[in-house]
Image (cartoon, rainbow, N blue to C red; front, side):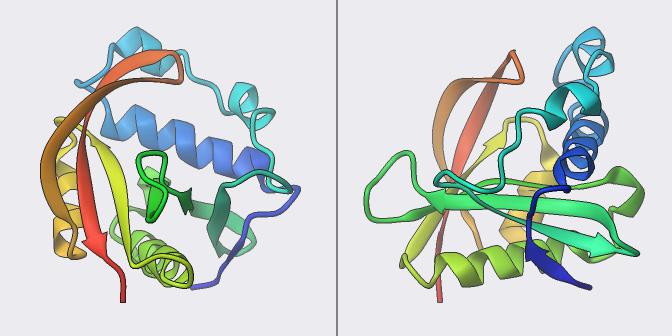
Length: 162
């Protein structure tokens, strides 16, 4: 399964994965009207894959973006990395795209950091299980954030990198 850096031209594919993942995974955790109002076309213009501290990668299949991960320096600490996001289109859940993305993100983060953190929406049990299976540890540290204009509560996970 090809994993490569996100590039110009991937914006709508990444936005589609992002929006459809939110609509599937966060149903019941965020208001339905909010989720139903998300549109990939609105999100796509907000992505910039050529500059910034975020290093996005994409999983592609038949030249279509099936999933993406974004990572870089931690927003909480100066000496560790952070996995900012990892999403796979719901039509491809269970197909190995998420595992391939997180493995590559960890490998790339390990080039610069000895550990990494990530934040997970509280109540997203599928994501909790996914990260625990990948060796992350939930720290029970929580925060409230604004994402896509919605207020969410999150819990932090940490992992030592190889």
